[in-house]
Length: 435
Image (cartoon, rainbow, N blue to C red; front, top):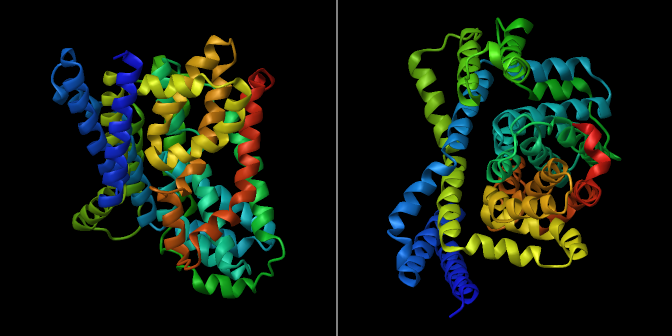
């Protein structure tokens, strides 16, 4: 039996295990681990020289451990900051001072971008701000379906926004690329797509009086001043800037420690009387909140290790890459989100990495292409079986309509984002000036 045929059989075994466990367990994370275990065992049976399957499973747990630590640390910072009342006070202050519907929606969009951009997870933006944004949008006269689209779309944009873009990080790690030069390559398409979403969602809506909106928002936290709001954000921004522009004058802290330092600053700036037990509850709730995300990146690492050891990862990548280039350009905006729906961040390894290597052999600018791919993949966060961000957005707005109808409503801004990303992939040299 040829190596290709053997690898194809292993791929089929893995897919069958993943599909059956997804149907039975309803969890893409556990399903990926089950598929990895089955694949590793089948691979060792077929090729005994691979050695113990346990080795690949244990190694896989450590592949994305740094990302899991980043998730936890960033979410601790965001939740302590939110508990202090800084976010609700800031939101109330913005609503009270901004009377224009479009300006208010733009500010809400920017606020939605921040938690996800800091943590790398769009779901955190929904956890922290989804409820407040839903209340404000409802009083701006926007219907429930479009409110859900707004929250969902800005959540996936926040996951793609710098400084923490996990798809880009994973592709860079796989291709041995430095994680630099992506800020404007990501931000400019995000700003354009966000503006389109704001116009699409807000067109024709008639706002209620400002007093009615303020009546539904949480009251300003007593003792919360602007310096208390700004200082934790300033500290994390300063640490980011120093790490980039003065690396030799600063110890290597790493993103997780930077967020922990900023969380301590947010704790010190908290005007509320908060006990150690209260902070323990915040940490407990944070771990419960980020556990699915941590489980996701760890299960991806396990599957990635098993696929790499058995050759399945190479087969998937080489099969897609063997298509004519024009087909790759046309299909990537469809295949990418679908695989994101199945593998979540694992798509960056299964599909993103091989694409980076392929375009690199063509002499194309892979920094631009990597940024473009990381704009395409997040759109799959609304697709089954995982649909993490889409499900959370629907739960936040209590949307009870057809999920397919919600996806159709989100199609316009997603098409704009997808088209921009494809243009970046087709003509990467045109955008090289942006980094």
